View 1 (cartoon, helix red, strand yellow):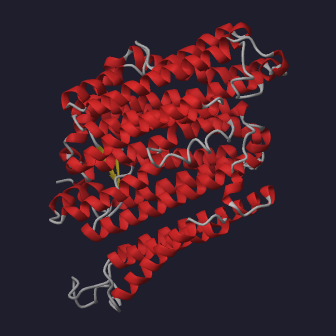
View 2 (spheres, chains in turn cyan, green; view 1 turned 60 degrees about the vertical axis):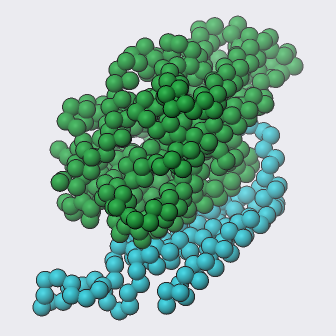
View 3 (tube, rainbow over the protein chains, first blue to last red; view 1 turned 90 degrees about the vertical axis):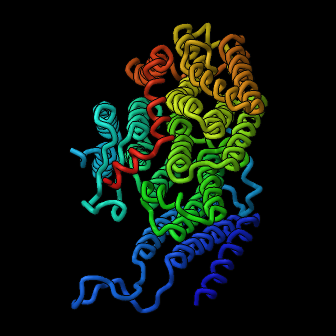
Length: 117
Length: 499
């Protein structure tokens, strides 16, 4: 199980960085998206994967008797997902605006700003 | 009482929400924003005196004891950062009440402004590393909106680069936090400080530290990660550039200082790395500034160049060096904000930022020129103005450590700054203006009250910077105290964990 998640994280980071190095703006955005998901899975993995043991103390005892799933990584991932959701939706709207203004999806076409505001 | 240390943050939040409720009523936005910034400034002054007198104040959110809950910590460093941010915020809000156009205000400029400062104050006050990440995100998403507000083509082009690199930095920061959590099982900075020291496999710790260097290095624009800054900071209006130039990169520097004195105490490898980064940043930044012919692009490169002086403090890593670096940080926040406001006034006067087309400001505005000269000279660090004193400390520390390459870098950067400012002064103020480039003087056409609102913040920040220069012994005492707290993190850990 852990090996599977490790390979998946590697794939997400690798493909994310590959896409970021492309010249297309949409691919840049997808790359960032994949990288963010890779980071979320990494938090999940490093909090130790524990199957089917929620962090709830049974009613007949005062302490945990068995290994339990760490709740902190889940809280962290939830926060990170919400944040990256906001960032990504902003980035998509920004991309659309830039495309409407420049008529191009190529990052190399963005160096025209000689004018100052 | 302890709960109130997050008051600067809460007041910004309340102001932002209030302004959202008054959507599109630009005139009211200005008054509320300036008044609230003044109030926050007073609160920040009160808390910096309080924390100076009583020591480190902590607040455990929701009464969850550290290291389980989120801790907010007000030590001298945090309180001074909050104070300087509030000084700068007050000046910039007064400046932007005139300098930012009505359309931008109607679409929530001031509201986003307050969200951004809430994020900054949160980042300075928090004692939890994941919470620091969240505040960083609050700041960057606000800065995205500020950068794109108005929607002009150059702004959009630079925003793509700015957004992409900042999202990448966030992912790297998150990865670093994930690895750190996997290593230690904690997120509280004081707790991490103890647990990191106890880890046997220090190679893993070094790799994690490097991830943090990259994440914060992108935010604070150090060599070789600064290329996004000069290609994006010159496009938004001056008031917004003043926030970015004065405060956003400094947040990265604050985080570097905090993480690399409290959690990862630099070993020889990291010290060498920082001193290399410092030299490279100083030299590449000044070379960039020398070739630029546009005032605001020149200032953007000077931001990069002067970041090097602060990194030099980490590269030398002694009490004297850290004192100098912190002093420089204080000076830089005030002067860089002021510099971009000055560039905004110049733009109002002559309608361009290109040096070839500017000119003759000294003959048209003799008194304002003197004011601007003080700002520029304190940037260069001509004694007894504010940029001079921290350099003495950094040089002294450099000689003590025998790091002559770093000293050479600092000397080159200082002379390059002097050269570009002298060049800018002759081009913009002394040279006769090219008659072909004559344009309407927007500044002279403005109402008298508007002109005062533009000049008053510059005067205010200049007075603060003059105080930093002439009252240097007081600032030095504070900086020394902070540097001592950095090198001996025991009181911080005790205050947070209550042991």
